[in-house]
Length: 112
Length: 115
Image (cartoon, rainbow over all chains, first blue to last red):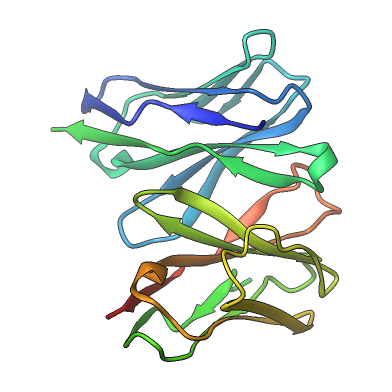
């Protein structure tokens, strides 16, 4: 079945890079997404990558996709305290009308 | 654009009462999704609509839950009767299938507490 897994927690120092990892099981994924959720708020789309790409960069964010290993990562350069939040990885599956399957979320804590 | 709008933002009710959650999707979006988020189960898809028609309601936990989309700009999720285990944050999301990325845009959520 479809499953997306993430580590639960990551702590980094302000100014360092953060790398949040995600693994998924369904090889028919069309798009993979990273969402950010701040306390008491909804999910904010950060970026997405098409499954035939291996890298996408958007300002401080770099997404790497290893389709062979079904591994997705999000790198945040120069991490700031405002980046503290929960980050969700999600995959959309073409044969499920693009239903999203979410991971459990990684809580990122940025220490001053 | 105002984004996806949900109301109320917070709802506290007593067990057995009817609860109605509301959602206004982004104008022009043809898909609407209802999710539930809890600590134990994470984000779960409850039901989704395409062009106002329910497509997949396999995530709806019980017959106590029902959802409608009478028009392209409004949807409701109703729980009747509510139970304490329904306490969660309920999110609505919408998507425009014609844009690259097939991205879903989420509302701010409704935090439901059933006492």
